[in-house]
Amino acid sequence: MHRLRRMQPEGRRSIQLRAGLSKGTRMKNFNNKVAAITGAGSGIGQQLAVLLAQQGCHLSLSDVNEQGLAQTAALLQDSGVRVSTHKVNVASLDEMRAWAQDTVQQHGAVNMIFNNAGVALGSTVEGAAYEELEWIVGINFWGVVYGTKEFLPLIKQTGDGCIINISSLFGLTAQPTQSAYNATKFAVRGFTESLRQELDMENSGVSALCVHPGGIRTNIANAASMNDSLRAFGMNPEKSAKAFNKLLRCPPEEAARQILQAVQKDKRRLLIGSDAKTLDLIQRILPTGYQKVTALAARLSKGR
Image 1 (tube, rainbow, N blue to C red):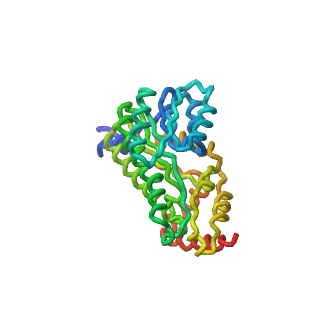
Image 2 (cartoon, rainbow, N blue to C red):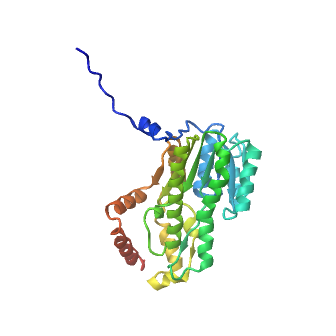
Image 3 (cartoon, helix red, strand yellow):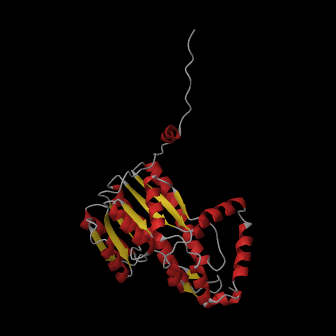
């Protein structure tokens, strides 16, 4: 009597291989790797630089704010890793292309690009000037596109890398007076999720991660542009920025820690903060109904 062989169910790995997909890439550590970071002069970008340096990662840092870059460089002075700083406007293709080439020339290779730079705009759809829309799209979306496209071929040469694009909680749900910011962050999400699938199909050893931070204690609210169209809803532009600041509770160093952990775990998406996770859950349960909730919340908070 023949003994029946127990059939083992196919795991995720074998299914992926049969479909022509890679397992992704799992970066075991950051020692002796090279990371490029936009918006490295403050906030999450600065903390990413600090944590990566502590783990032996060489750094190519960029920001439009030279003073902020100098402060970050000072924090890394005794780190023992190579650090190069570059004044770069991420909305400029020429500047991003030159920075990518400079990074390889100065460091020999590049394994990661953190497309972190971003700005905010508070305005109604009707009240937003075209110049304001071009400004925020240039930084928040085109900056990510330029960073991805200019660094991706260079990262592929290492066979061990990752593209990390920073979206937002507002890339998961839309909010009144944040139409332009929402549009750019939804765009980053779609762009990065599509990229990740292409990289899976190519099996190049390069991965992609889309990050959705909630309220991170950075300078984005103070630096946000708030125009007078908010007054149509009874909102004061100056008070709105201060009120938004109160919602920024997560320290940037904690956000940076979670991002690096997600890179090492080869995650596709990372939600940072209870606010991001809660709103993501709400929009899953109420895919259109959440809009009434956020509109009501905005209406109730306008007098504060």
